[in-house]
Image (cartoon, rainbow, N blue to C red; front, side, top):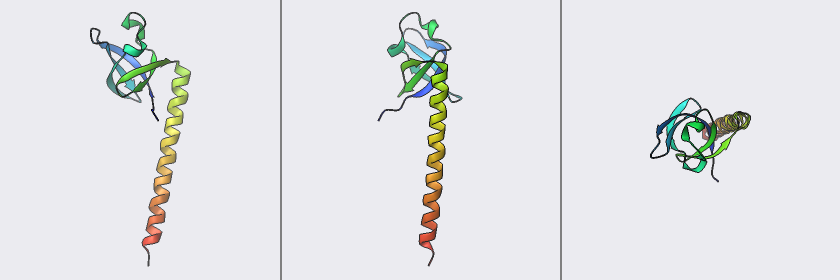
Length: 96
């Protein structure tokens, strides 16, 4: 399964290489915008995109970005809960 994480394109870093800086959950990383470029790259600034392995794969609206981030955060919390449960179960198994 491929997972795209919502990121907001905040600047164009290298127009010739079609690279832009995207902010993903507060972390900035350079991404290739070839898959979403349909005109001047400056038009992508402030747009939201699904980011996957260094590429902006598709443009999404801000509401969809917020809902996706919320779902991903929920999955992270669920994962932490599962890990805590597994650790507790392992600790019980270690007792004589």
